[in-house]
Length: 299
Image 1 (cartoon, rainbow, N blue to C red):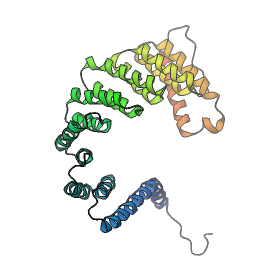
Image 2: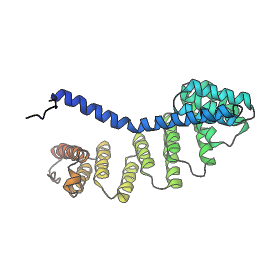
Image 3: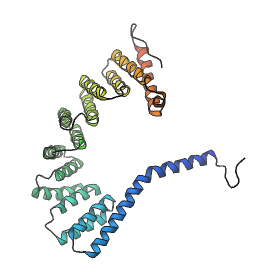
Image 4: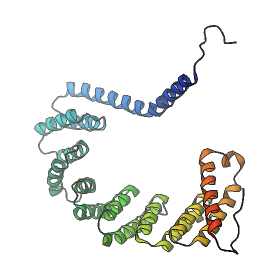
């Protein structure tokens, strides 16, 4: 019996309810950030009303409005700051960042060229111009700016090494090895970051350097408390390399590692999907294997 005042929802209706709930939960962090930006913009607007000739206040509000995707209003604030103080060097830097995000790469380049003529050792300006030059399909100039920016930065983030590698990989094959060397430079400076190794593995595979790719996977596995994902990745690379017997052993090792997980972790969707893929590869490789190869291990 349904309690008084309750309604019975059809399955389709429940699906819509759950979909709405998931959407609300997913958008909650964005909504919080959105509200925070609005409050900050409102506070700066109040400050500007009290001190309307303060160029720095307009630039701070321009920055927030750009983050809030209010590009027209951000541009208006930058122009107001320029009228109040033409000596602010960061105005062209802010213009360049805004125009890049706004989808005006030619205008962004002009602003950043002016800024870097005054501030040639600005890593931020060089990174922005590198991105602009990439958007303008000028990879060599883009890479030069990335190179200089990374030399100037005492502690660059891994994303910049990845961006430079992507710019190199987008060019001719002669630049692909440089991409790998650049990622190794990042690993040397920042330590054994999995993010950089993963991009390096992809670059090695594009070059056909299967042994180097496997060596990188093995390095990640050595440092990882769980091996099953990396053993499976090892199997994938060995399949690509045309070494099915070795691939079968790698997948069997991945399956054994997966079976050591406690049931609460082994039965989560991601691990169940990994187990399915591993078993499918074992079955495929076992059926194609010659006599004498160890048969597939069943869970």
